[in-house]
Image (cartoon, rainbow, N blue to C red):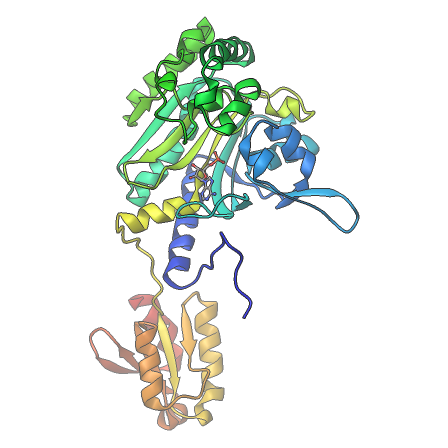
Length: 416
Ligand code: AMP
């Protein structure tokens, strides 16, 4: 038996219903905010991630699925969605008409140690807003995510925010961090030792060393922001309060990807063992660093799998409806021919209709209609065919009525 790859899972049954519901809700919320769907390839040239997302990012240095194709090209399975969208914006010159508001959804691949909430094929749903550096756009993407979670029934969400400043501020801050950590870097994990020179900010959110007192006494990035960066951050907080979004400033939040500037944020629930369910921030330099023009941008991605985990953990029952409208029941093969056009007409009118495909007994057919939770059963026997009058059973009231075939559609239009 061939088994699935570690860190992947199959989606079927109830889980498939949940996935479908959550995707459609995300789509509906994004469309309310006037975001348009974008889909970019799952495979891209390796340099897009290794150069664009940054070579000090764990995801890129250690976790990408890199391979050579048969044409000896270096390719990578996308570990996240932002870089591909940025590449598409540049390649298709979409930046000539700003703002751009996109949403996407799909599988990402990271070679991480599989565990609960951490997969090698992970799904993300995200948004990208290009063209505005006004804090109103930061707030738009945060509120989109927050409202989506509320609509799902996930209420205990906190938005953690931080500002990591622009390039100049960060360079100044990095120097201070290096000074702060370098004499005692031996106390830290191997990853942090490496981070010290490359990206000391990442030491602040290291999972292994989070209890080291030097992390708690580290200089605060907010003290290094310039006036404009400070004002922006204050505006964002003000707007969050206005929209009554539950937030908290968290100075240790730096996020895993190198391309962020200024605002970074995460959606967090208080459920144990489920960390961040989504995160994002601003990346005003990303497009330029990939060879495009300078266009400010902000966005985030939800960890779709984790959103589903939270729904399960909180026992939220989603209004998924998998019930069948009508089960067509020809009593024998003789009536099958007659049934086909009825089924066809009903399906074309938008009803969810099914029929026994396995030649089951009458009892088996009734059982199947129950399994599908059919609202109505249309019984078609010899009499029905001869007279053109069908028997319709309402499975809730158990009432049966006779109805001519011509009136069948009108009947369902009135009742379903
Ligand atoms: P990132 O792209 O790293 O900013 O992650 C965005 C969100 O994706 C996180 O907040 C998590 O919810 C989710 N996520 C990241 N890595 C994984 C993973 N390996 N498995 C499942 N979800 C993940």
